[in-house]
Image (cartoon, rainbow, N blue to C red; front, side):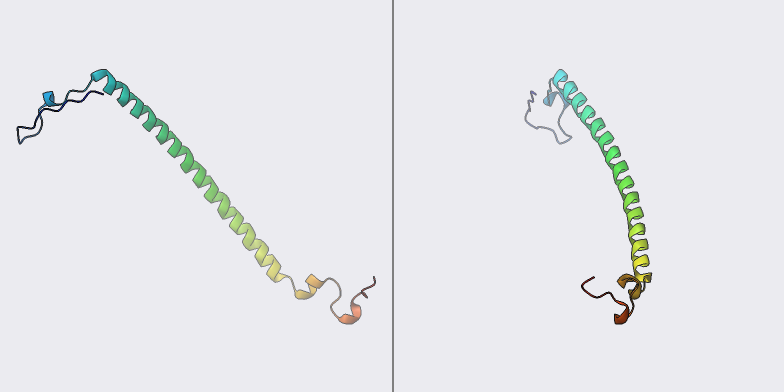
Length: 95
């Protein structure tokens, strides 16, 4: 890109002829930037959809974990040990 600057001599801002830019180069650069922006917008939308889906999946998993936790807490300690609830009903260690 060719950029030439003339000395600044007015307080109202630079005149258009003070900055000369090669038109073809700036058009291709602008086209490239527009293309990249469109791609990034599409990527951002895709990633946002994935995040929404994953958040829904996390919610379902949290509900399932809570249900399992509640089921585990509702089991009586004797149910965890099996049928034997007293030392007389336990199997001897050699069985």
